[in-house]
Picture 1 (cartoon, one colour):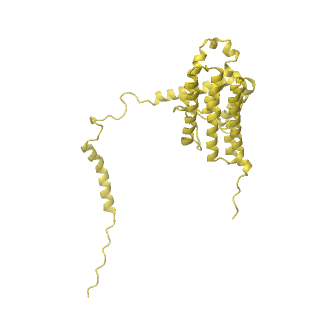
Picture 2 (tube, helix red, strand yellow):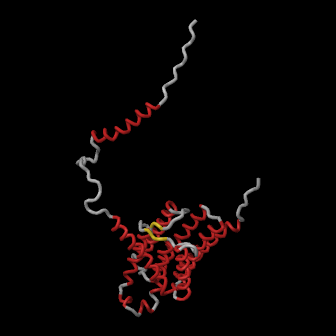
Picture 3 (cartoon, one colour):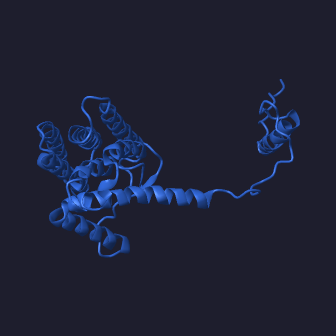
Amino acid sequence: MRRPRLPRPSVVMLPNGFTLMNLFFGVFAIVTAARGDHERAVWYIIIGAVCDAIDGRVARATGTGSRFGEELDSLVDAISFGFAPAILIYFAVLRKDGLDWVFVFLFSACAVMRLARFNVEQAGRKKTYYRGLPSPVAGGVLATYFWFSQTPLYNETVISDLPWHTMVRFLMAGLAFLMISNVPYPTVPTFSIRTIRGVLGLVIFIGLIFGMIFLPKDFFFPVGMLYVALGVVSSFLKGLLDRPQAGEGPESTEEPNLFGEQDDDLAADDDAPRQRRRRFRGARRKPDRIPPEEPSA
């Protein structure tokens, strides 16, 4: 028999290499933000997000996906999209002499819990939606807020009159809780020209590349906030449509027991079908074989 052909070690390490590149840019973003170069720190977080999007596609294309790669990707995402964006906003916007560091902890903790839940519930499975806001989206929206705050659209319009230095704290808390919420967020469709969903995914990808090249500072934060709001609004509308109307549903003719226990007569009624099934199985059971009598002397 032929031995199965195993992937080359270099091919196996290729998706993990992109994951480690994501970690490299996440750590570099933290160092750059601590040095005061916040604009470049945002670029490093965005580049890390691109590496994070590539590693999974490379693993699926080469058939080298593994449990090790999934765990490594989650650990790296906790740093690149949890701690790095939060510490960037802390150095760039928040007050360093107060308790604003608590928002850094809150955002990082929710990112870690969101990734842990994803590994338990959805990792390695084909999915059309995410349960909770994905951590790369939450980290990207938070990081690109600094870019957006440096644009004329922010500084020369009525948007600048809003109390953003206070609102950014609510933004961090809102994104953090959406990561650990049950709000469903649609996945980005895979590229294809055979289906409408595939064409939509290709258009979204081209639009992201176009925005990243030509209008990165004006583009990413509004689009990210639109995606965040889309999940919240769709979940709210779905809850309204699925809510039962008053008077619907089966009506009970029995008064509830004070302690929530079932009455004896109801319990007997529930046990009756079970007893009938037992008798039916006993009737169908073959009779025991009678041993032959021993011949008399």
